Image (cartoon, rainbow, N blue to C red):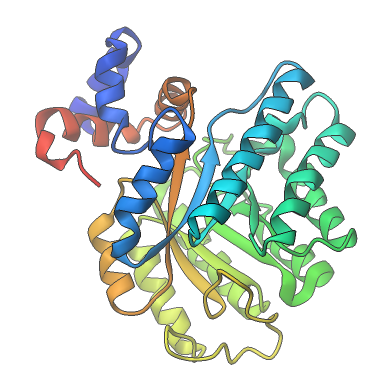
Length: 324
């Protein structure tokens, strides 16, 4: 991260809110749904599709969960009305997972069923290790209820991820749909890899495992070694942007999906690489977070992963880089 990044991280808690907002606007669409729609409209020409995420998690009451249920209904209505090539991503704790798991399950089903009726995919975000198993269990339960338009995120830094891939694949077959990322949560070294090189290796191994299991593989990484490995892994399996998925164990091609895989990027990160991949024909997706809790989101991301401070530092000392 470097001395400058560490200094920025230490200064952020006392940094004026408007300064944090100026930096965050590269990574967060804005405070409301209309802000997110404006960003998506402006980026449609870049050959990308989108994932909408309403910011907020770890609610303290089920009444708060009602807000997220209604907001995701609004987001789905907007995607349909705008004809956007987009899906949604939801955090289970924002729907009440840590308060009442059964109620969270019902909230998630409401959203997922509306999405299913309109051929829209739902991604369950993966939060910290406290909810890893319950998040996976919810996806499996939704499939058991006939809702196959839902998948989860797995974090490659966790030691358990290889086993989770095997378990999901055995239960869901080709309908298994996983976004694989290294994970923002800095977990204990007792349960997770903590060194960069180890995390890269674990991520590459997880991508190989997902591809071989026939899962739809959403590669969510900004690390060049992971992207390079992914392209080589796809070529080794005869997969690519102009080739039908040759894997005999893969599920059917679904609405809004690529040919067995896609590349995903956070808003404001590695736009040049994303555009290059899109130009080569790969399906690329931009993760679009929005909501009134943008400040808490930005500060928490900084606390949980100090490496983000380097991007903040860059934006401050080289403001011309603060673009998408």
